[in-house]
Length: 308
Image (cartoon, rainbow, N blue to C red; front, top):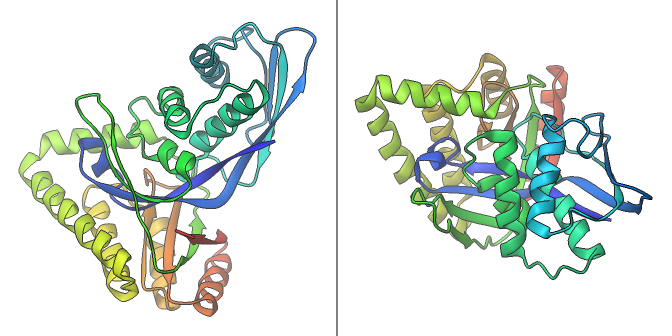
């Protein structure tokens, strides 16, 4: 049994699509995959999305398309097996559930068939499969899920290798994730931002310049252990995301609730327009208080560590 972990984008979502830097980390929420023998063909049961496929029966099905890419890249098209998938990561929440799914499958196949794939190759395959879900993904989700670390990420817009730098923290960050439970489409959100950018290039150029500078400051604050400064930058990043139109009243409410209950910073994570947000807390006591406050608003909350 092998795992693929969810991700949290601390800084830079949407902006990374255009080659700007972002900072992300894996989190404790996961997808896990178990392989079993099968007499004929390949079958996959995903309990998280209630999908149950026999490979090739419906080639338009997203899980079928994903599996075919993975099999082509690993050379396992002629094998017979059954995959059982479950976990605790919420789907369609901006926490990298599709990347976690893909990474868990590749790791399970790699181990079972002794393919000898290293993290770099696993990440490359996962990125190709992510195109099925997101059209033009940045690559940050699969990278965070594969390497399971806090990382600096820059997308290579020329098609070459993305820049990945593993970051070190003095101690893990205390984080609460709040889930609006509003399903959003990442590809649609990215497309909407692109339309707005093309319509108002001067405004967006200014916002993008601010976003680049913000991530540079955030890297410095994180590595020095500056929680207060990091929280301020989280809040500024949320303001920029509001300006490009990807927040929502529910996300704003959860951010406000978190700050009112002691969080140092709060912002959406992922594509926005629904999905999840996170709150950076100074300690465990505040983290529990924020999680309870989010639940009192009738939203789901999850407690996790980042960069640990």
